[in-house]
Image: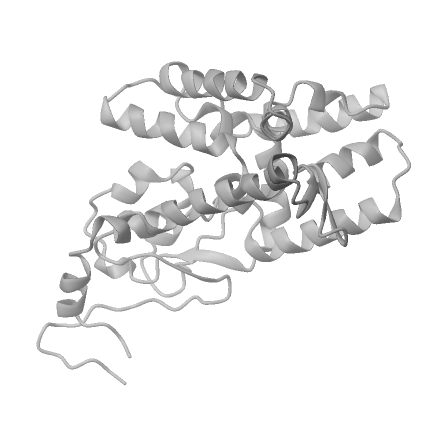
Length: 297
């Protein structure tokens, strides 16, 4: 059954929690993963051993970061079958979920960059981005070249994401220092610089998610009132326009851009219920109907 215009008017009157549902779920996800890793050192309850680069869950399920594993292969290192199996499991998950869900649902650095983005909007801090968005792909290529030349994971010695992950789990203060530096850089120097323009980890996972099954769709784009709230809150605002501005049913409302992080913030902030989570093959759109017209069954 399609939704009437009256129902959409009612749906726009949402609570604070409804306006932040997906953001809250992301924070719960990020903090829960951190607590699972820390349950061993803190409480001697070893649910997960290791870190986001390589871990073993319940002494049974191996999980390996495919970005780290790919660098290892370029470095000519011999990998165990357990490591390769863990990388395959993670790869299949991100292909299903959409690769850059790693950035918005798991990566701890995302908390710092989201905070800087919120403060920029609140205090109207203006500064343009100093980097092209494809810079992250050049850094990704550089990481693989460095591994091939040096025979080591040399990029990981300076990769802020890796340093923050390991530092948080091992309790090193370097994690806080790195996150604070990224926070300040995004806040005052260059808008959305790290996650949106520089991070090679995000670039790698975007490539994994090229065939991602779970997607955001502007299924109700006919109801859009051009308030621009979704563009303002989206960390990769360029991914919205093709799906939202489609002029007919031949242009899919599904956001298929590989840089979409599936963060769900566009769903949260839209009072017109334009967006929803769906799958990549659901190209249907909702078509507005006059107020006096009954919904179809």
